[in-house]
Amino acid sequence: MGRPAPRKSSLAGSTPVTPPAEAAPADSAPQAPATPTAEGPPAAPAPEKKSKYPPKVSFYQDPADTARVRGAILHTQVAEGTRSLSDFINNAVMVEVQRLEAKYNGGHPFPGVGARGLPQGRPMGR
Image 1 (cartoon, rainbow, N blue to C red):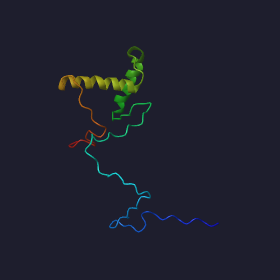
Image 2 (cartoon, one colour):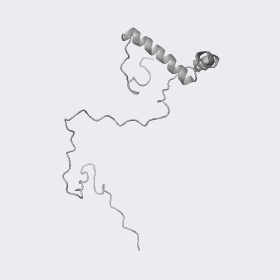
Image 3 (cartoon, one colour):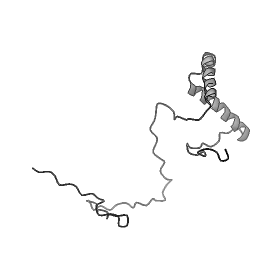
Image 4 (cartoon, rainbow, N blue to C red):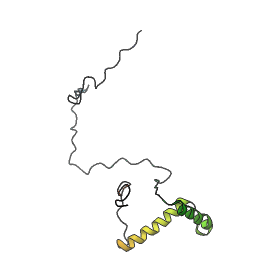
């Protein structure tokens, strides 16, 4: 028994100018058209994998301010019921979001924006 013959690549002989010919399906059943139909709304994106933890958000902060935040948490944990840095920051941010919604949006929530929905990089002119 010898070595099996190598399989031929489906890309063999193709170039960017002449793409590979599509192979005919083994079974001759008619195929549905690949074009989308006008029936119903487009399919929703696949649901994200459920995690034990919420998505992580990061930001830049002066180290001295970060130390003050940690100090505030440590010295008020029992009195305020703050369990972690994440809990503290989330509560503080949501208080500010509610203030902005009340001031600029009649107390209604602003529409959500995705992770890449905000301008990226350093602001112009700085």
